[in-house]
Length: 530
Image (cartoon, rainbow, N blue to C red; front, side, top):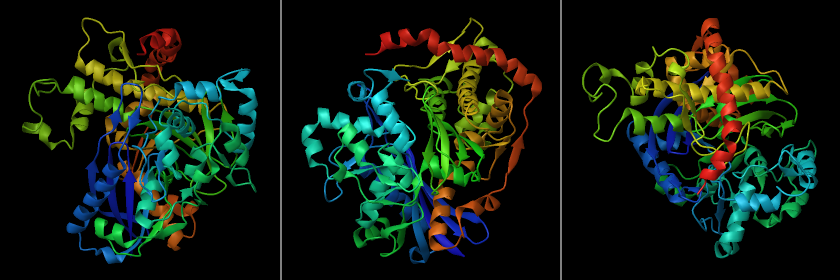
């Protein structure tokens, strides 16, 4: 048996997973650490590189304190991480400022000056839109894209900008900290929307850099996800408690590797993810984009394959908001005015399980209440950093259970909307694989099936799909797997949820109303922006 270490770097924490790989991926041990997301009043969202690294070190040492596997037995290290961050570092790899999260939406003026002017199609200048689509297969038309974060730093923090020597994404920064080498995997390079992914042209595009005024020398060498980026250097090994010289692989972003960990690897396979954020992704072998819905086929972890990808900013984060502000009130009591750590409820794995169990008998439509999960703006199928969450349809008889149920429904209405937008360009699959923390609850899985009208399949430990994907690319790099196409045989469906035709019919009018709420309130959202 070969042992692999996978770091899953999320928005709210890192999970360190030890896998044994033989005929399947067996999770042998895991440890995690949380860290903050700094949400700023001007639309900023930042994190700390030291927080990420400290979380890695502490969770790694905890993991090995509780397992018989020795650090010297680890055959390889890999990463799965949040994407579209901006980590600008100096020549030695130290960030020149706090890394900017994918959620950062400060660059409103930069995107207006950079692409949202003149003759436009779908909000983008036609003379920049067309070359972008030709070269990258997509266009940097979201205020949250890394390009506009880069331009924001250039405009607002010239001293920090002048110190920058490398432009990295989250995991690529952590790989550099492990190895002392600066690289970026193909999927991270694509996420900058400066990467030419045309067959035979793969690499940084000088034309794109010139068109948007990007310093080409900041962009590091590009490697594949299964390539060895380097060996673990002595300083990193000491801090992590691992063996010097352990191979470190490129890994991938969450949007690339979670699909692999879900077993959705063949052309046409669709998976839905619900974690802090949420998305719908379908594997394709060709480039495509729908600029009207903000969906593009992004470069995946395997050369020649793309993920047709639609993202929402807050999925599980909306449920976390519910936990903090509806389920748990200011005097530390829960829905039924008793601490769930006492009595029968203590058998549940978490407060989320308790909440979903509590609302399972609320009928479709939540008594007429609809929730919009746009708690940090929205990206797809409409780009609007001003959009906000709201409860629509509250009545005197509305209670917390209906409101919590409506939040779950709102997240899944939005996922259905993106799924249907994808069907305009390609055929999404049925069944759909469902992964992430949201897939842990049978109540949520059945609700997703009823709202979408699709059969929903889950896998074992769906919350660890990203770590499984990271282990898979390391296994391919080491030759343990012949290629990534054989991964699905390692990851069978653990459970299936079939849609109720009656509930799907009952959901329809609420879903159609949900889709109209943004257009009906778009001007009002803008007026609320501070």
